[in-house]
Image (cartoon, rainbow, N blue to C red; front, side, top):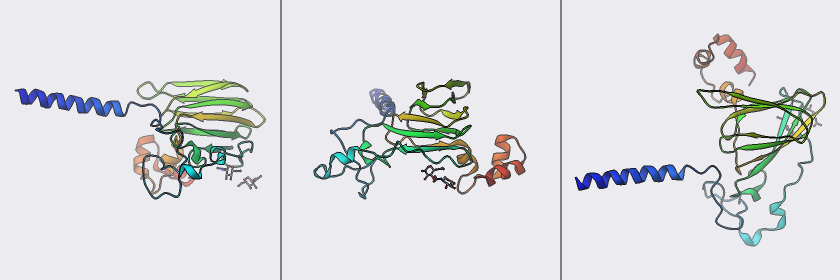
Length: 220
Ligand SMILES: *[C@@H]1O[C@H](CO)[C@@H](O)[C@H](O)[C@H]1NC(C)=O
Ligand SMILES: *[C@@H]1O[C@H](CO)[C@@H](O)[C@H](O)[C@H]1NC(C)=O
């Protein structure tokens, strides 16, 4: 009997421990002032290993070029300039990143998910329709029209989008709660995966004819 309860206690502790280790809502806490990513390192860790502190200069903490508009001449009419750890190694271990988003008139930043970050978006120029959808079973759409100076939050892991509903260009700046938020573009992930998801699967999932699925797949 004593053995059973010891075992039970052990099981409960292990479960509790594993839950506590996944309950953090942001990137792991840094254990030093900084850890500029060493992109040349062959060591695989969660994030990047640190560049030798002796080789670090002020330049490691600067990213240039966010004043430049991205090219929005593409089918969606939008362009995201990422300032994630991949583009800005100095962000490593800090749990933050940002992006500039440019929109042509009526341009769309199509529905997508950041698996590892909540996003806070500021409209710098123009008028945006934005929205996110809650998880099942509610699938509730929270939608808003934003004007210059407005700030909106997209919660971590939820599908969201922005669309320029003005006749001029629009610009937004986003801040994200991860050095590597990740991007899951919904349409491209589902219809443009490599290799493709079988059209039988997608026809059934979307309850349409396979020809329609093939048509959409051909666009990605
Ligand atoms: C975004 O803009 C950059 C810089 O102009 C360009 O190199 C890139 O191809 C654009 N991306 C898309 C998806 O149009
Ligand atoms: C923007 O992208 C389009 C399509 O790729 C290209 O034709 C055009 O030259 C680009 N414009 C600039 C300013 O780079």
